[in-house]
Image (cartoon, rainbow, N blue to C red; front, top):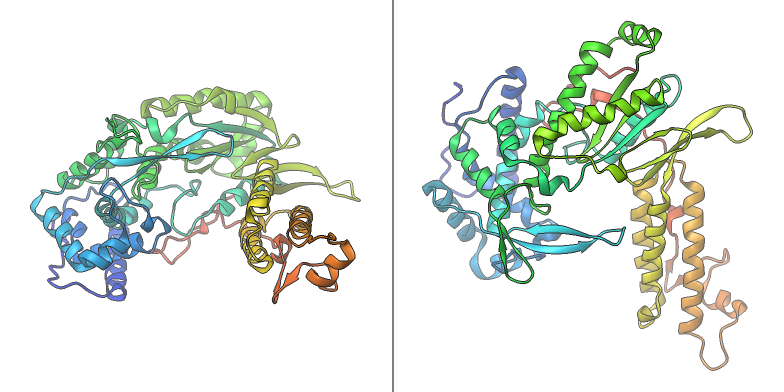
Length: 494
């Protein structure tokens, strides 16, 4: 197929979700292969795919099954509303006709302020349901193309990659025998709010020359925000958090950082001889590990090598309209430890030996967060619940939290969290079932615990975080294949 040949299959009927999934996957595989085989290729006729029935059905499945399907944009429409009152096919037909005629226009996102762990508020932008479907369809088309360019050091909001992989890479380079012991922790100030549209679209157009696609993406970037007070604000920079397309667009912009350090690695540090030569000359060696707008540079060398990278990072970010937050950007030694993606990573002596190892554990902030959730669930306002209902809710919350941290040295932390939860449950139960004479610990154990002092009621047993087994997570390096490339590439070395 030629570069500018139409890629619309011309379907005239709406496929079922399974058929749509496989049709989309086949097209995505082709797009990814073309992009991989020709890194300089600019795709010129993609717009027809956006309103292809298979892509719209797959996009609807993505939007309607997401937990945000119950959240409405400024039009107050939810997925349930469309299914019950409009009909899915009618709704998708309206979107298809508007896209096909060129009349589709994104509308303002609804701003919602969500509390952050530090007490501040995060701005989320909630698009309308129609805008979400179009964004999801756009992502289905664009992601396979840009995934061909994204570097292995980037892990956030990418298929088949997770925070665990980012943590594993940091552990791989900071532990023996690589010993990258200095770390530059970086924090971008208001990244999603301040990305330059001009810089983003320049990187976008390096791959996409279809003017209708570029116009549609730019329209989403410039759609504006409707505040909680009903005022409209223009969005001259940034990509609103909350949109399906926003993480991909942010990765496209921040890939400038990945490209810079990846090129530097391949040119100056890519093989063992180059690294050995730099070390003999007293020069540093470093690697970038990025998860969306959170990233670190792990450094083999001295503190001043890590400090010098601060200015280099700032110089790469400046053309994107971004800057580092000075108060959250720091150089630390691995023996001091640092927090990344909820984990605390630190090198310390292995108990009972003289050997030093790098350990990853839940951070103090993450532990406080889960304890606060336990406190809320066991507060006096929940005493109207049955004990088994409360235990079930706690089990789900604690197991979900522990599942995220199960690949670190977390066993002792899980036990401590469960102990905190048990004490909260004990006080909650004694207060609820106290009666006139009170509830002694002996009576508490007889009525509400099994033989091992675990809370149990109506067949529901408190299992907590300790029910999640702590297991090792193996570093996969650059062997992580995309959904469209089953064959792995060579692993990274350090």
